Length: 319
Image (tube, rainbow, N blue to C red; front, side, top):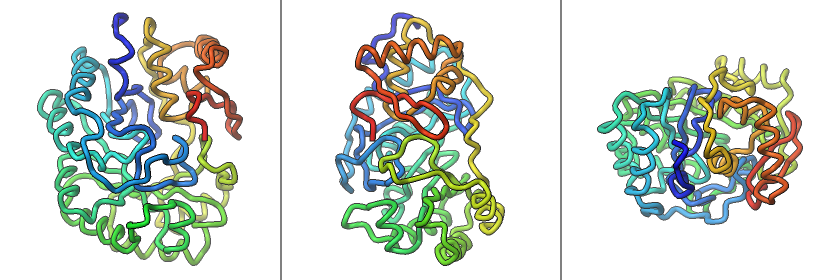
């Protein structure tokens, strides 16, 4: 493993101790910040290619090659997760990558983090039907709130998005979780939450999960939700799960020999504290701190101060 080169880690990252999915290997099949939304809270920064165009943005052969290289030693993983710095369902061959994993590495479950904007397209619903867990975002059900939080592509219609999720639920045999990111003073009002509750009753997801700002978002005015308010929202939305910011207790196995490369690949897609890096890569806190500090000094990474501490992100990616 010490002989891996940078090019081998362009499209996978982690494994990351996920707050919801345990030890998760991230698969990023989209170019950085190619998305159908430009959400104010996105930890990957502002969308630079706001689009609805589906394409083979990244060669699936390259993605398969990286997966094969990483998985041939059968690492302990709970999920292989389509996530990263863009909307995965924009990739026209996502189904082929899913089929590859299911065929070559059937011992692993597959998850998808999606912004839900394309479920009204039948081909996309078909392309993700074999995924084990789909975590779909729905932050607002009022047009004005949707535009303020998610800043969608001009051709997207919220009513169409909601109908797409409802249709997907009817067709999808596996686990569908709905994630709602709460932005104080926008989607936390009694009126909006009542509308959200009504739509959830139509979708009938297996789980509803609430999220709040933990890492640096795109817009500095976005703040974390007050814990008491968060608890009240959870109870109102039928005891929705609050995503625990303390992370999974699982740790990585250590990656000495190519730490800098994998670390940079990870913080490019999700800002991390030194404690996060220690957990993710199974290294001491002191080694994580020193490695991150060296990357900052070399101009590869930069710091962002947040409520939870000092986060590190790849230089040029900071919101």
